[in-house]
Image (cartoon, rainbow, N blue to C red):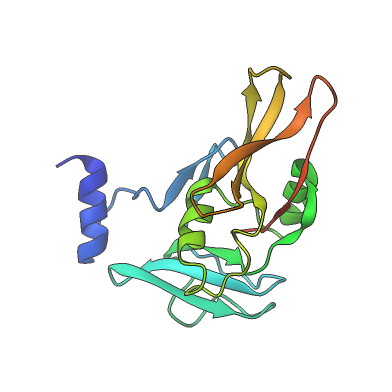
Length: 184
């Protein structure tokens, strides 16, 4: 069995596995050696949030109010998963969105976290994930298109599967603002 399938099967069956599962580590180009440890943190987020985790071999979640600790409930600190804000924040440029999340000791979601959360939006107490597009990446890409510049992933608009990219900076000076939500 391939390592990915073995780890996933072990997660579902509740078997202890020493290797890190794909849900534990999300690759991204960040200061923390290019990866996130996808574990529920011991934390009290500043805005209403939802914890999404793998607990007892299945996906669990719990909605909480701003300032409430992640300790206690369906997801516990150390469980595989993430914390995502229930409401999007006001539109801003990508770098200001990243900075707002950093100030809150959080970060922007990665596409996997955003899309999984969106597909379960109503169950997880999340709001307006498909009303417009949201920043959904901590990594920028170089766009070889006609305007040449730097873009970042956005998700949302008409569906949870709708994705694209917005300008972070372009040769013509273009940059875009879009709503966002923070995760940890």
